[in-house]
Image 1 (spheres, helix red, strand yellow):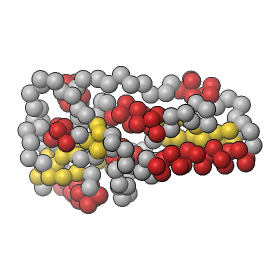
Image 2: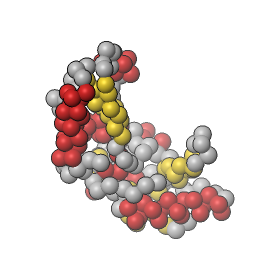
Image 3: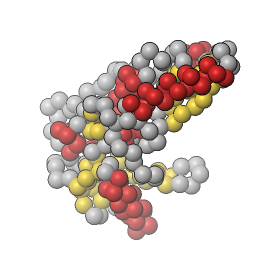
Image 4: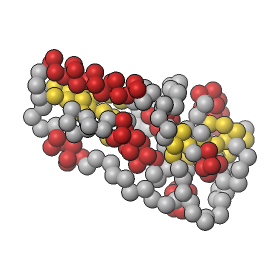
Length: 207
């Protein structure tokens, strides 16, 4: 887990609309001591990076550790119960077939990946308690947008489409935190178009 960049300079917040649902409290799952140590390490890093804060609300969701193919363990929160009561955001993410079609015939492309992209978006203050999770050290809440929320992809895609408006589907494609800048008109033109994309990201405070 790397250091978290500052939140975007844009006035973008992730909202969690749960309507009239009562707070959900799912107790912490018992874990092996080694797993608790991994959770503690992640909490310490996220606190230091400003991704989470101590919480005191009525919502609580369990932590789960997911082992990736390379053996790395990923810290996650099980938000399935929260997602079930959240009003769905239908903002679309790009279709794979349309993306591949748009890249047909290009000569050059450059791929960009935003560092901890989700964490560059703030959770709306009134909804932060809904992201809370419990560890043996206490209750914490996310102040930056975590993975696992049903509408997080839509929030991120909407922001990126706004940042790169006028460039998407013309000189770049964006799918969440992955960006492809492309051209069919040679290296010099590609450098110019890539610079335009980077300038937009810089103006938005995205890294």
